[in-house]
Image (cartoon, rainbow, N blue to C red; front, side, top):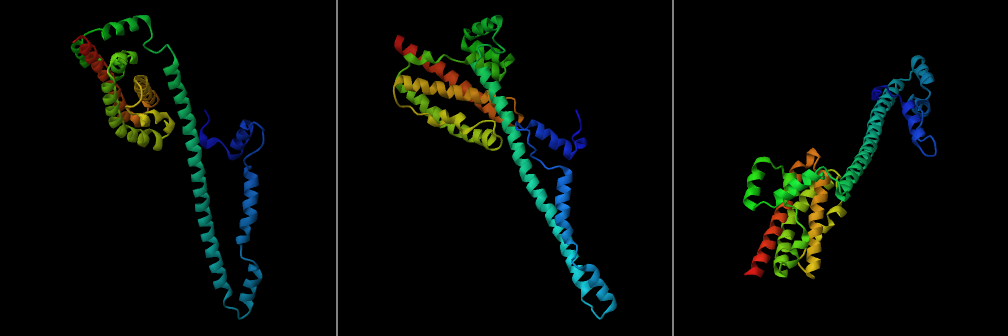
Length: 280
């Protein structure tokens, strides 16, 4: 790959024209830029300097050198300020370009995450691994904790503890309402953390990605509440898939994984209570 320092202004301008769908030149050549600025900046040479200096040399005129010195001091200062002004404009445009580059990169990351979510095949989707996970998931809770302490990563815990929302169909509405109220309370600091680290600081996520977290409430029919719980789970899973490989979001990723584990375990617990209450 050619070093950036070896790419000339004209070479880059030509590549931009090649990439332009209309093949139209969008950047000036170095010759055009030089010609335009030199034409304008040559006016910084003091007007009538030669005759004024001759007049100073051979007459009683004593003010010309002082006036010319002031002219050139201001001309020199003008060039300094012009350079700073142009540099500021360039820095602002570079920031916009870097933002667009990051935005495109985030779109690529989001597509990859979306494909992972919508695909039926993931890293763990081999027959043997699926069967192993099903077997682990049928173990008693205390054995799961023992296995977890030795070998499970947080990501694997999320996969193993994942619940089927349909299991909550037999749970009493009052428990679902209480659960949703607790989820709402717990989501507030998480929303703030997501906005800070994954939306405002870097746009890995958009505000629309976490809309379901802002709509958690324990009202409506049982199906409404189950749908709200499922959307909350899906939202956390989506956020994790987007940011889990971003070093700047490691702390946020861990918080979201822990929240998912809390939701899964609570779902299993209230499902157990529902069965126990029905049998009792």
